[in-house]
Picture 1 (cartoon, rainbow, N blue to C red):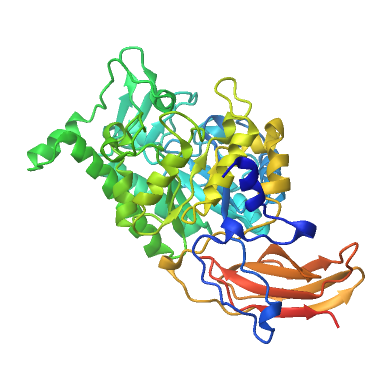
Picture 2 (cartoon, helix red, strand yellow):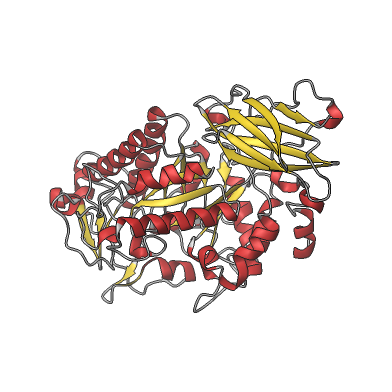
Length: 530
């Protein structure tokens, strides 16, 4: 299918804003089939489903805050601007980096305040506030999910400037941290390092009303070249290999393993270290809150011995000791966002071939929501035209087992680089979508909402009420023979459906409640024009 054909096939808003179903009906759904008391021929269509998210990076102040040591008021204003743009684009999730380097953008008894907030590690924002609580509250008020993104093992970024705070792991447990080039890195072979990350993540799950936990691709560090100490993830993405890689200095933990009777070779042992964290996170998160989804965003290339013909490049299996295929096949995650940071026609790393590979590895039927390198739009080198991202979204929609995507990062969408935000707003994201349901964590229908409607001026006003377990309202309004779709946060108690300039008042309005796992209630007819 050519790109222009795909855009027509999966355009989300048709004539007069009518819903088009296409690939956006894909993804897990537990939707009651009919609205009680309404003729079959007058039923609204299924709710469109697609995970539309963007990463908001705090490390090095990539996305937020724009620089360290802003006042609390300015930090909050920037956060609101990001969330308002996400809402305007009909995104439905933000993946916020809350732990860039064994630090925190929220008050924690386990790790210090991040230097990317205030310029000094351990120093809280002034005047004091809780940034993560602020983000969660403001996101939910806009009907946007907030996923907390943790870097699992990085202890210090190579661009860090602040000295380590007294409660940073490099000072409280220096034996668990290794120097690797210009980085400091927690050793995944040290029980103390594993426990630290697990404790930090579960502390956030307990204390905050987040919708998801998200970890990235930093397990063992990306290899750097000795003695120049360059390389890391940029080299991996471009397929460059170091002439002499610096090995990770985990000799003490390795020797303890061997002395204890361990039989694995060193590479397999390292992969086992990563695997035990992944499994423990999945079990621990759901033990605390069953509705919080766990997502992983690994490097985009699979292990070499399983790759499709023609796919070449960096092996996270052999270098990061990330056995992503095993995580998928064991179901140790709820969504999988491989960083597919190459173009559709990239020789050796074609986007569609890689997407199909990961879908094929997904034997447990988890969500596959690939990461898109939207920041390459307008980049100094190897930049994408905006159409590349639009085409990747369109292509992903042709795969029924890939129900969404994540942009890296929010910056190009905030800047509207080369018009990408305008393109998305008017075509791919012309109307909202619900996040796909996650039935393996729970699939019971929530209770139907209580809805009252009254005609007032040029609108129909809805009074809404739903149970505490619900997250959203799905609202359909019919004008003539076309249904229009909207999503409102469950915190809203009222909603206006304005008249159409040509067709006047809505002929019918139907509402359902949607719970934290995306399960939809029975639908209620709230309004029918006399």
